[in-house]
Every structure is written in structure tokens, then in C-alpha cells.
Image (tube, rainbow, N blue to C red):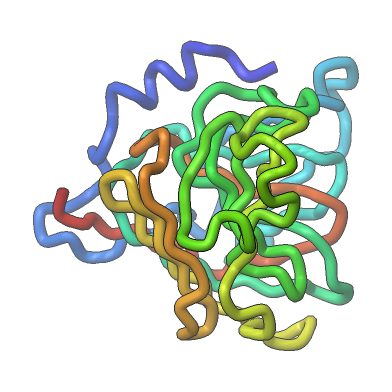
Length: 229
């Protein structure tokens, strides 16, 4: 199980990756998973379980199963993250989690975070996990509207729809997602389309995570650069 000391050590290294000139730096070295750690609940009782995340052909790959997360050791704030990804041979689910912190706060697997959805045809949705963020037209864009509490806890209306369903490319083709986290705001672009913008986020820094959630996903770019506060 993820140790609390891992998160605490990350808190001490906020922004330490960023160079003074703010040029993009890759979160993945192209060879192995140095700088990351996995939290896969099924591994708690089976230490030799098949890994959910691997380095392959210069890419970071989420194999989809067993379900879990690959999480940066460090904590980040005020940054721009550029991600190039593709579903390898079938559509499915995955996500990039920003401002990640406490592990397994939801369904015994998902860490506190704001998930930027990659689920095929829904890329750019927000999912609130133990945290919350606000957008215009909240009643319309949170599918359960005012009938259910808005928030990030189990039972809350946690999903916030993106603005442009249809921005993704076909399965097997590369997509580019850009996420900007600045102060209490999160902005998202998919293949050049501006697809989401949330404000008043309940958290402004944290680790970054990618999911294993059913199908294989390849990441060939995970570049981060700093933004002004």
C-alpha cells in the first residue's frame, strides 16, 4: 500500500524539477519508471502480480489491468502539462489526475485529485475525487444537476462535462492533451480545442497520476513546464 511518507517527501520537493528558464521537462525518462510509484490495490495481497504500468519502446504504457495509478514522486503547482497518448487497439477509459494527494479516498482505489478524463469520446471531462472544482453552467454540466450534492465524495455529482465532445481522434491515432494548472484554476485543451476550464478548485498543488482502468494506453509525451503564480 502507498506509504504516507512518499507523499510527504513529495511535498518537500514542490517545483524542484523546474528549470529557471521554464523549458518543458519530461516526467518520463524513456527507459524506466524512475520518478514514479504505483498504487495498485490488488498488489497488496499479491506482490508478484503483473505490473499495470511499464516502459516500452520509449513510451510509458498503462496496460489497463490490474486497476490502479502511477503517481509522480514529486508534487507540482503552477504548471503546464503536455500529454500525447493513444488507445492502442480498442477504445476505453483512462485519465490524468492533477493535484493528487491522499491515496484510495474513493472506492478503495482513487486518490484525492481532479481527474482530467481521457475516456474515449469524453476526453476533457472533469471528475472530482475528494476535491471539487467549479465551472459556469453548473446545473447543465454536472449531469445530476441540483438533485444531488456537487462535490468529490462518493454519492456526490462528481462529473463535469467538457465543452466539445468530438475533439478526439480515432482509436490508434495520437491525441494531444494540454492541462494548465495555475492557482485554483485548471484549463484543458484536446487536439487544439479548448475543452474545459474550472475555477475555485479546492486544491492548488499535488502529485500527477495516470490510470490503469481497463485497456492499454500508450503515452509518448509527458512534458511539464512552469507557469507564473
